[in-house]
Image 1 (tube, rainbow over the protein chains, first blue to last red):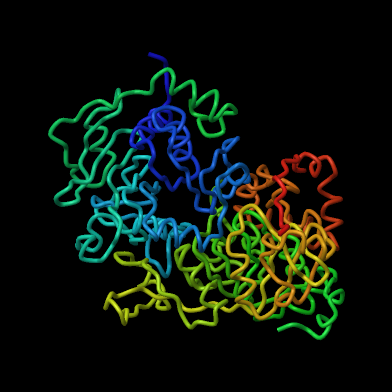
Image 2: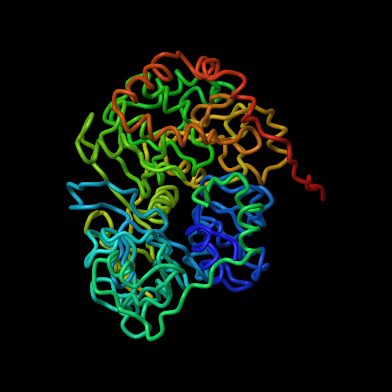
Amino acid sequence: MADYSTSECMVARAARELRDGEVVFVGIGLPNMACNLAKRTHAPNLVLIYESGAIGSRPSRLPVSIGDPALAQGALSVCSIPDLFQYYLIGGRIDVGFLGIAQMDRFGNINTTVIGDYDSPRVRLPGSGGACEIATHAKRVLIVASQRKQSFPEAVDFVTSPGQMPNGRKRAELGLPGGGPRILITDLGVYVFDAEDGELTLTERHPGVGIDQIRDSIGWDIRLGDDVSETVPPTDEELRIMREVLDPDHLFLKSA
Amino acid sequence: MALESSTSGSGKVTTMADAVGRLVRDGDTLMIDGFTHLICFAAGHEIIRQRRRDLTLCRMTPDLIYDQLIAAGCARKLVFSWAGNPGAGSLFAFRRAVEKGVPLPLELEEYSHFGMAARVMAGAANLPFYPVRSYAGSDMPQANPQIRSVTCPYTDEKLATVPALNPDVAIVHAQRADTDGNTQAWGITGTQKETAFASERVIVVVEELVDESVIRSDPNRTIIPGMIVDAVVVEPFGCHPSYVHGYYDRDNDFYVGWGDISRDRRRLDAWLEEWVYGVSDRAEYLARLGSERVETLRAREVLSQPVNYGF
C-alpha cells in the first residue's frame, strides 16, 4: 500500500459517498477534490454545480475560488446567482451538498458566524454564504472538518445552518425540505447522524487512529456505532488521480 | 434616474474620477457588485481617494475591495452574506472593525447568500420584500430583525421574508458596453443585473467600449440596458486583482498575500498609501504593477461558436 496523507484519505472517503448520476453542490478545496475524483472513478455522470452559477463544470485546473473562470469555461450552463439558488438548490434539484464548520454540535447544527456573543464576538467568522440554504435544501449534506475539540462543543455559539435537531426540534416540524447532514468526515474518522434521534455516531476510524484520540478531540461523550470499522484507505489509482491529474502543483494536497 | 447628460448617449462616457465624484455621495448605500468575477477595484480605489464617508456597503461577498474601503474609513455599515477572503482566509480589516471598532465601528446587517440575492430581486422588481425558504432552525433571524416572516395566503405556509434592497448607487463591471451603457457580460454573472435594476444610480465600468452594432449583433448577451445607466467608464484591467473572463485571470497571489497585509494595520495603511492614495488613477496603478505581471494574467483565446440570428 502506498503512503498517503490524511487529506488524501479524507478526499477518497468523501468521493465514495457520491453516487453516479447525482447532482452535487460543490465547495472549494476538499469537496472539489472529492467530486472530481469520484467523477474520474466510479461516478462519471456526476453533475458538478458550483455556488457561483456554473452547472456541469469540467474544471481544467484546480479552482482557486468558487468563482474561478475554469468552472465557467466548458460548463454546460452558467446562470445567475438568483437562478442558481432558486431553480437548482431551492427547487430541490441538488442531491448532495458539502459544508465546512467552525463549530458543530452533536446534531450537526453548524456555526460559521461568530465565536462568542453575536454582538461582541471574540472572533468574527465569515457568516453563512450559501451554507444556510444548502443545509436547508440539499437532499443530503456531507460535512468535512478537522477534528479539534473546540470545534465540537456541547452547544455551538450560533446556529448558522440547521442540522438534524435545530433548537431541539425535528427538521420536518420546522418545514426544512432537505434531509440535512448525513455524514461527517474528519481527519480522524467517519461519523453518521443516527436515523432515529439525529445524534452523531462514530462508524469508522482512519488507519492508525485510536478511539481514545477520537474521544479526546470531541467536546462530548461521542456515541460509538455497533461496529466501528477501519476506513478503507485510498487506492493506488485514487492517489494517482489526486496527485497527477487533480492537484499536480500540490496546491491543496500540500501535506502529502 | 438618468442624469441630464444621459439624454444623448455619448454624454455618459466619462472618467472614473468624474463618475464617482458626481454619483457616489457621503452617506450613500453603495453596491459594487460581482461574485468573485467582475469586482471593480478601480471604482473602490477612487472612492477611497475621494474620501467618501459614512457609506453603507452592500455585497454578498465583501471581498478584498470592501476590506480596503473599511480600512480606509469609508464605511459606516456592511450588509452582506459571506465576509471572507475567497479561497484564501480572513478579511482582517473587516474583523478589526467588528471585533475592536478599528478604525471605526462597523454596523452589520447579515443574511445568507440567497437572502441577499432575494433583496436585490425585490428591489429591482419594486416589491417591498421577497419570500424565502431559508432560516428555519437558524439563529440568523435573531441576529437580524430585518429577517421576518409571512403566512402564505394560498397554503398557510409560514415563509421567511427579506426586505427589498434599493441601493443609492450601483457599480457594475462588465466586459463591454456601448456609449449609451448597453452592457454585455459573460462568464459568472452573479447578481449584476438585479443590482443595476434595483439601484437609483448606475455606473457601468467596462474593459472595452464597443459600437452599438456589436451589441445589436448579440442581444441575448446584454444584461444591463443603457436606459438605466447613468455613467460609462472605460477602465481596462479595472478589476485587478479580481478577473474579467476573456480578458485577464484573477491575480491569486495577491489574494493569498492579502492576509499578511490586512492582518497588520500599519502595513495595510502603507499599502493604501502606495497603491491607492499614491496613484492618481487606474493607469498609474497598472504602471506601478508593471507590464510583466499584467501580461502573465492576460487571458488566452477560447472562442465560443457564433450563433445565427437570421430568420
